[in-house]
Every structure is written in C-alpha cells, then in structure tokens.
Image (tube, rainbow, N blue to C red; front, side, top):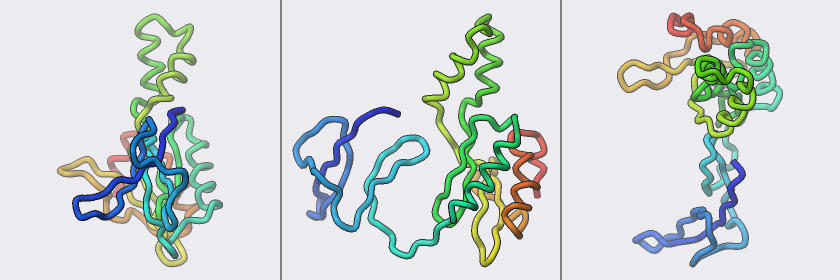
Length: 182
C-alpha cells in the first residue's frame, strides 16, 4: 500500500527476541532480517516477520495460474485475487467489490468518473478468503467459506484435477449458486 516499515527487535517477558515492524526507526532497529526468518505480507498488507518453515508443502506457480485464469474468465469476479497459501490456492474476495462501488457511483450521480472512483477505493479494499483448492495427494479438494455459526471452511465439495475443479466451482463465486454448493 506504499507505506515504508522498519524492522525492529524487542524482547518478550522471558527475554526471547521478538521481531516487529514500525513506521519509524526506533530503539532496537535492525539493518537485516535475522537468520532463519523471513518477511511476510498478508493479502491485506499486514507485514510481519516469521520463522522460515523448511520443507513446508507449497503449490506450483502453474497451479496458481490455472485458478487465476478461471477467475479471470468470470467478468463478475473483477478485483478478486488468487494466491498460494501453504498447500492451497486461495481465492480472496474484495470488500467492497468493484461492482458495488460502480453501483454506488451511479446512484450518486458520479457515473462519469466511476472508473476513477472504483480504482481509488480498490487501493484500500480489504480481502477475505472465499474459496480454496487444497492439495491432497496427486490432486486437489475444493472448499468454500461458510457463513453460518462461527463460519470457516466447508467440508470438501469435490476432489480431482485442479483444472476441472476450477472450471466447475469458480463461476459460482459471487452468485446465489455459491450458497447451494454442497
């Protein structure tokens, strides 16, 4: 989001090192990331330092591209983001969605500058996971976010080759059909 952060080292109550970022340089400022640690940024721009995880399962870039292409083929999913997270390919939904922002601009008589309005607001959009394709054996399982009770990931909706799952399930995102997936 264009902000600059500086890495610092502090201490926990037990004296162990604790790493964090601040917008200004202060006491404990560091010039480099400590050995065995890496910088991580969440989908919503939260920057943190985490311990490197050796041998952690990961998703091939080509698999991320398969899901991203399925999202790109759906005009109603403009603004959605696809990322590898651990051993899964996750689709993130923006809040607010570009279509909601365009509707707002038109209702308030600023449709002549709707594209500028949408672009500016999307820079500060927050993202939430909505669907994921988790690696399992030689294939993937697909899960959707649920919104009942405490919410969370559903049970597997399907299993198989990633391309087939993406073609079958991605079009339902952002529609009433999404809530009928079982």
